[in-house]
Image (cartoon, rainbow, N blue to C red):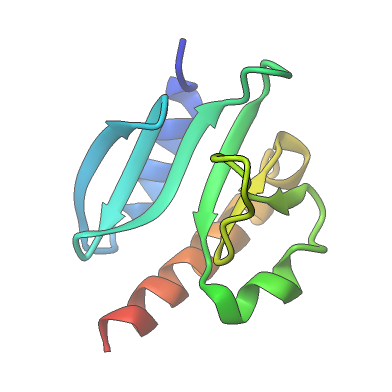
Length: 114
């Protein structure tokens, strides 16, 4: 499977009150678009077989959040994509932790629309 339906439903539930405009299957996973922009995604890391959250936090927050438990730089293409982070299960399995990452992604998404 390319991504976990359980994890996708957890994300979907949290974005239900945001302006979730679309869900797109891409990059081997599922991307959630808010205000027509990439916000959060879920996939399975091929090298580990673990669920992996992709969070768009913006370049300004990138340096602060890279040290949060479970987060890593997003290097999907082999190059670091500043403003995007991968978060492994230890960083989002707890409800409070997933809420944290969704809030960060939505905060950036809102700022970007101004």
